[in-house]
Image (cartoon, rainbow, N blue to C red):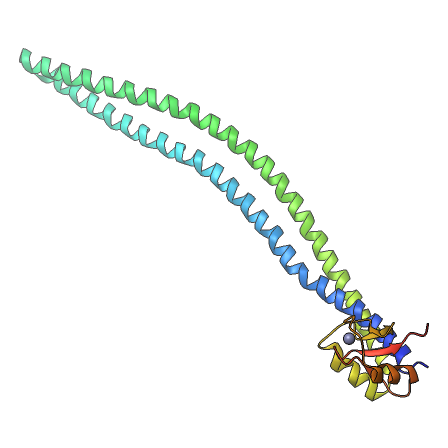
Length: 235
Ligand SMILES: [Zn+2]
């Protein structure tokens, strides 16, 4: 004969199982969200990296423009000086300076042109990377939204499961309930059948005495090995 508390204990155990798996699933959500958020952050960092490559070239271009400006100032100064000198050797010396600075300016201008081509290429790469990465970000944000919904659903399912557990506990006497809670805090499932003299939880052979108690059903029997509540599965 089965102890009268076994049936309500099995109902409670079933609901407790549901509750525990909901808790587990819910606990996994923040980690899942953090992993998706990390991916979003990585994509944003990649966009910034593509942008800084382009910005570095813009800085290089500005520096060249400054160099060209100052060389042109020097050129103008030499030309003014040259127009004022009387002596031929001074005129020639300044003419030499002017040639040197003109060569500098044209070298800087060539470099500037190269940088401008590089800027165009970098801009294109940035635009392509940005588009692709923004698409990825949008996808990850959708995933985050799905996770938010999942979290909300799990929370409401968990609230329902907790209510169901409380209801099942209400159908039990204090003593078997206390025993269940005590054993369930260590091991789960907590209420198992004995079949072929073996505990359905730890699969070890139970003593003849424990089996006898389970068979009789007057008291709640426990496995000698693992302490689970056992009941006799007649065969
Ligand atoms: Zn056992």
